[in-house]
Image 1 (cartoon, rainbow, N blue to C red):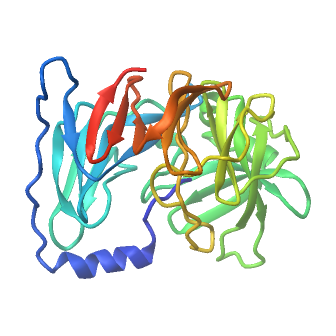
Image 2 (cartoon, rainbow, N blue to C red; image 1 turned 180 degrees about the vertical axis):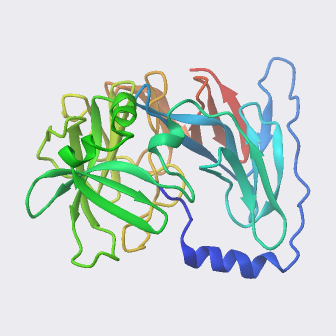
Length: 323
């Protein structure tokens, strides 16, 4: 569902830039600091490359992250080991072929196969793929299934979807509470439905709340990220607010359906009961799933890792911390 810089216009720009001969840029390597300190890494920015684990019904973070030095991006792992040198103008990503990728075409393009948890490729299309999601028609208020892939789209009733060969596989891997898009269907069979809002339903198609959001994500550690007017909040599985809409996005670029950029980006999911968030002042801290502050808001950036650790940035220096 999520797309971070994968529009056709950007692809055309990448193709034009790829022929310009940009080569790898010298990269600071991880270094051992003074005795007793954590290993550190120096760069301007680090973004996670999140995935979906539908068997457990949670988002999770891949063991690879994309980092920026100046105006060039590369890829590192959870221990600051450089997988791909910083050489390209655009961040690395993960595609449906279960590969990390970075680079422009024509030119230098790097892919490396990575292990993904079961369920990812079935229900989350990713770059260049397709997917299945729950939708609610705003005119009829009926919950439907939207099956889509690159170049095609089909909206069907729950009963129609039951007859599909992959129905049982899909139902088995979906969590009990799922994000749902409110859509307005097009009169043209060549146009995809327009997403006008997000909410939640169960996997039988029963709407769980009348609350509508600009975006709603899957639950992790019992809470989910929701967004209104460019600000993020967290709700629990009873659809009650854990926090107000007081947090800014932490990474990536969030695009609306019309292609307009509604920055500041994506909020982090909870990992093992902890959430990295950014407040109105631009400082990062960590809260728990009850909304209580665990780490004060005094850091330049914080990125959660799937192993429960965090990358924490102060100035241009990143450290690995266990909270």
